Image (tube, rainbow, N blue to C red; front, side):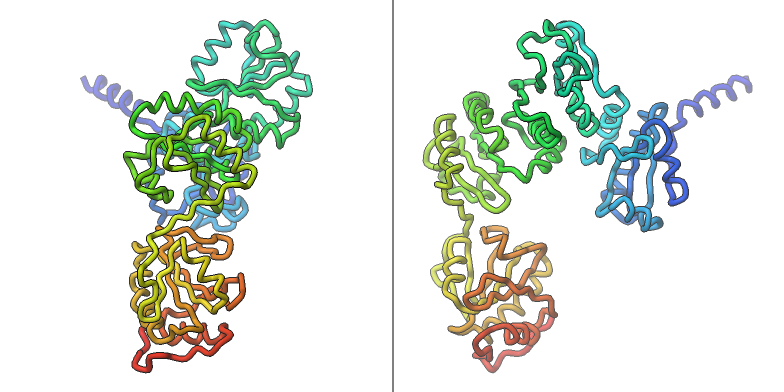
Length: 471
């Protein structure tokens, strides 16, 4: 009986054994990431909440792949120099290494299954040879994204060109090599084609160079009209340099509208990336700045600095969106200005309330301006409000515009105003297009000293009863 209990305990112990996450230091990191096989590394800081949340999922992923990959972690508080060497600028940061070479960053969902699946892709061969139509159909059914390389052999220029960048996309595509023209006969020889489930295929038509192939695969990683999910957000972030067309869908006939507009998304694929968003059930359209009576589906084009709106009084369809895009590409569409209503009395007690539709007109007056850019929910802003109000009451004059603008509800020139946090206070000298940023104490006296230093006219109190208001 005792023997059985001991044996049972041993069995239970063996079942509970987990793969150990290797603790890295400056002394063992090179040896760990340099060995054969794959090493998935987490760079973290103990105080980081996101790191703490990701830790158990990372450990579970290690268990899933305990026989095929090494999972390791480096504490950047203890190993600052080593983390600097790997250019770690935020936590947690995940990287995959093979034989000492970083083959990929990981920016996907921080779940065990997602991390394990990402690593599995790098454990598989670079390409899978397919020799029949049945094998090809099976590959399409088993994988959400297939990149078909159809060429005479793996020694052709086409095969070599894409072979140089396959490693970068192994977690995104299942790469299939076909050398028989009878397999997938609708695809020509010496071609690269991406097949996505529930979407039309996409054919590469650029030059055989790394830049063109990378641009194609980046875009081909998402559907012609995609959607925002935890899995796709990193992909869209990678494409942030491009213009994005947002199709704002209503509650009815969503599939019909998407099918109708897909042809336009395909036609302008190299100019605009399309995303479909169900907008009537959330605040997307309001945040973009569309009027409350907008007709759905609606459509906007966003760039890094501006938003351009398809006419909001008509329903967007393939024809109207196509016409709108053509006008936009010719520079014939003005950007949408997200703005609060223009105040009936914009200036009160020396303080001018600026909104998206009025800011430029004040800048064009050619006067000295002090502008306070804030977010209503910001605690620092809430503390600063009474100080700024007091300063405006004391120093507001015909020679100095003292303004404030709610950055969450109004658009403004992001090139002129480099806002990296709230509150942001800056001075625009008269007839100038350059902002001078205030970094002093948030007091009336220090604000006054800052303004006096930079303004071209006199800056004297207009209300002598005002006292300094310190935070």
